[in-house]
Length: 199
Length: 354
Image (cartoon, rainbow over all chains, first blue to last red; front, top):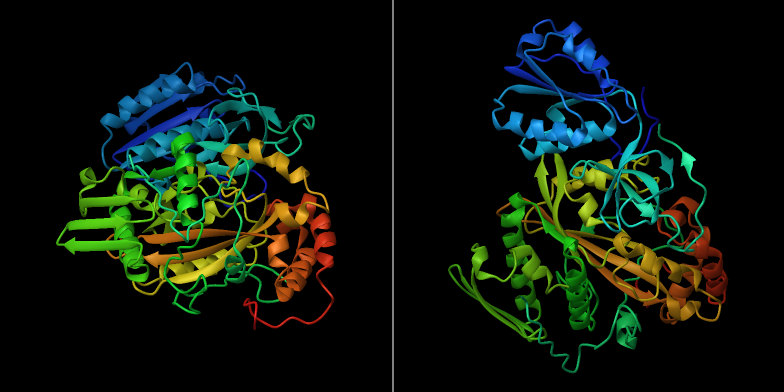
């Protein structure tokens, strides 16, 4: 799926395509398994140099069987995004120059993996990203700085400070999060009913 | 710690920008207010001009304007930073740009305001005296262990206005450091690390007009020693310098307090004198965002400004009024300002007497 046109900070996604590399680091969640399968199908040399980290999506989709059947040199299933990121940190300790990075799945997983890759010096322009599956958002409360995962409605209630926040398209790669801003700051208590915008 | 021992002397005002809001402009400060509208309507443009000294006594007389609010503004900045240190951040690769900024500001202030600031340099041994803030600092230039803060934070705790430092890479500018406590509702903590298009992303209409493409091309050509400037503006209820998104739930309710009786005193035109300097060692660009607050009742004492402000606010594109956060109060502002617009023509330019 593609997202409607938005402001310039809102991430845009492409389609994973194989590029020559010493190694292929592939990180996916949920329906992102399908994008990984398509990548392998279009790049016959990838599997033998591939390391895949996979976790179920925020909507519960678990296509680990798809990943396990791809014949990647290494593939691990993590129980959650945070546990996947622990594994990623270990993988990055040994990552060679010339490693190609591919991310697929939900925006929260893609954003957090991109953030951790950037912290290791990988330019964000060099990271391929393909969105598949859930559109729930990872949102930072601009007031308390807490991040709420898997936001489905706009507005929503900050899981840290309890303020009711509207969800902007303004996005920080450094935080891997959209921005949430108090919706009733000017008229406290005047909170419109939440609308299911992300699924 | 930067231990402020403020000396207000006979020039600097002892006032607040929060709580009891004792901030006020003196009559001479009103006359030198940087009224930003050079005609009777407003739309975005790439309104950038060389930042050359002009008009003695005006805010454009020097590279950096130090005015009667200096000491109280620095006290307000220290208050904000004590509460929320995330308002000042510098990514690790920006330290050299911070030193460039130290040099730019210390040289400018000691040259333009020798009665308040002195800088003695002997190689990298520097001696900086800031009399209004009671600071006497010897340090080694480029050695951060000799200052109580990182270089950018150290000097911007002594400078009115916000600062950001832009790294240049990949044909773009990246806001990778900043001191932001007098902002028009944007978050450094959220935006740090973004490129020129990303941190301007929420601005309506201007992207479609190609404003940011042209502005970036212009800024990438910025040369050391040839700074540029532009004005920007918004509206603020009460003379609150720190209109931060972080604290929006605290100051947001003030927008619902305006009446025709109090609007002239409470509603302020907030003008940013923005100046940009290419830095010599880092090749970064320093962006100075200096905010001036002027109450409507003070501004209309200049007849030309009263007429023009009424026309600009009345005719502004609603998307801009919404983005600048005053759509809610626009009709009330127009009603109040209309009393100061007799329909007479106004002269071109921003200056009150022209």
